Image (tube, rainbow, N blue to C red; front, side, top):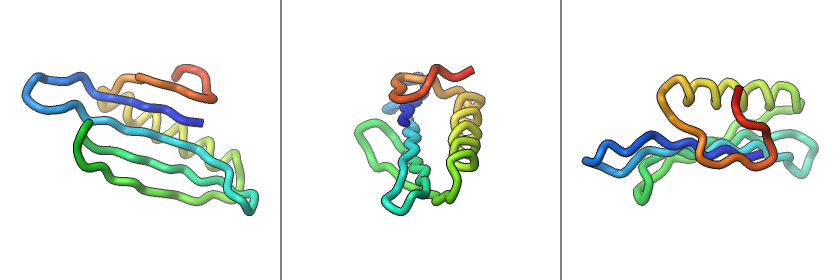
Length: 84
């Protein structure tokens, strides 16, 4: 699953983005990858490991909801429904 969220540009600088990806690893666990930064600039990548899909999905949804509350807008979704 993958979501790309972006803040509206304010005209002075490039918009900020957050990309959330939920991936299954080779050992049957789950990895939540969070990439954030400024479009066209540096970004930061953080990874969080989970043993169960339910815990990974809950963390994915919490991260998505937090970014939506901060004013980010959904730009692209792959493998998931639109946010509620």
